[in-house]
Length: 317
Image (tube, rainbow, N blue to C red; front, side, top):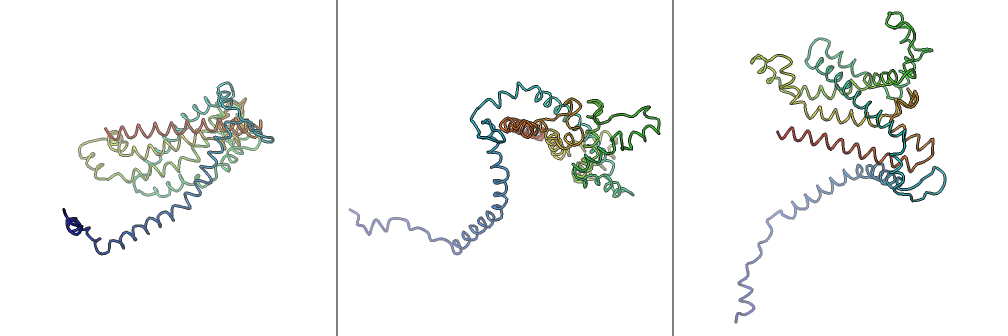
């Protein structure tokens, strides 16, 4: 039989930690704690002002929650009544139409402005500044500005067009018809946001190496071929970012309709968010407004996931 001393001698001795091991581990621990300390304020703000309100909205959507009075559990009535509300259906269809029109026109204008000031030339800096200036105006202020410009009583647009011979009688741009109301709103959005989106697209354009353009010109490629074969493929991540911002902003549109058109004429320009505000603060039904808000959030998440997945598939190819 082996003695206890023999067995102990047969075991391999545990190697001592290398010199400085405990110090390096302490440094890593300190760096981790420092990173958590920097991230803690942001996490607290996100949790307090986003996650907690989001959970409250989801809880409210399961209740009949009047503005004054006790809440009663009524799930899933708030969600089932969304399909029966004709105003919500009309607002959803208008929001889709507005999103498509605004996204297409705004992207075309923004991308055209970015291409126009892409290269350094005399006056390019002045044009960039001029295109970006409307971004400094608050959106509510811009809506009030357009309300005054397009007004039949004090607005200068109708007299100017009449002087130029473009119209024979004044046009009610805001409440005259659904077409003019939509056109006025889209024009406001393009004027306000084209410069901002131009700046983002311009950043992506300037990140493309100039050697690629020079090689394409040497091979005899024209401007259209360079745009289609070089600029657009290399700009795909930037374009995806801009489109996500445009679509999200269009779905959540509220200020321009609340200030400029009030949802008229005859609720023809009532967006989904405007209906949510009416449900909450006109009909005082916070539960119904919360349910519609949850549905809008789910649609936005789905749209963003689809766009990002399509972008990744194209990148993999």
